[in-house]
Length: 479
Image (cartoon, rainbow, N blue to C red; front, side):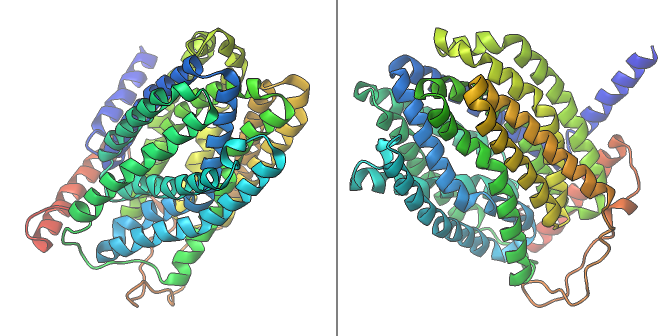
């Protein structure tokens, strides 16, 4: 009876949070993850059925190379948008455009380096076979930078409900292009479907973003001074980029150390696992946005995110462990060879989720070094383990390496928290973008512990008050 009562109380607390923006944003982004997972699953099933396995393996490597080049440009700027758009006010347009431009300026030279590597290795001729192929690859990188950052802008502006619609349209368009190019039976069909689909969507979404959302009357901005903003952006850009390197590099390692055919099996398993990971990544992203709006109540928001993640995570792991082989068999009979990797990825979700909560916390309180250290150790351990294990045990080595890397990063996070010095207030000389002294909240460890129900009611009250305040400023239309 006591266990039943505690379980009922836990779900009552979760239901009480349904009006909290953290819950609403997490729900919208979880729907987005579901849409992406279903359409992504359909995409790779179609690719496996319509294209030769060698073409699927090469195309997957080319797509990973595109994401690597673009990710070098956009990965950190998404956190700048999510952290500071909630308080940017009239500076929002400048912040979004600056992030787009900066991301592309960083990504395009990286794309040139990837093309040079592809030409030397001879494994990805689809992106290094002449000037047209290289230009298409660079255009795809530039488009992917904007396509990725516009999601972060929508989340930071509390337009998370738009994200599933955008990504659903992209998934359908990408699938249509893939089927239309199936007669080529080459990796080019896969690469074109990703690049052209993104380029089409960024025109529509950014037209809506800049004409409808960012044109609305807004309060004066409260951004940190440029040096502070640059420090945050560069630091978390490095941390986020380092964290994603194993995802982009592992397919290239599988091709070089195992085979292109094995990479097709690995990539199918990774696609499913990555969709599962996004569920918790989305909760962490919503936590960053809402924490930026209410830093003083962040400790309570962190507990809510932990509770939401736990309720979602356990069923995901159980289902994946039970049904890994049937899930991958949908891609084709041979693709069930990736079931072992998928099971290992599912087990690794536990340390991955805890590590993401830690990094979200560091971003809200504007600390760089602990997040960068945890992610760097995780990536170094993952890549080293992949190189050591892939030649010996095949693609399962990538799953083992990823799990070990997440645990290593979590250990560094634990050490950082154990030896953390209370942040306190920053020095009085720090000023915002308008030259006014910035106000900073009290240290997180001094936050009172509030039950989830009380937190939900307080957050709902603050949201309604915020809507009334904004209405008084902007002519009656809440932001």
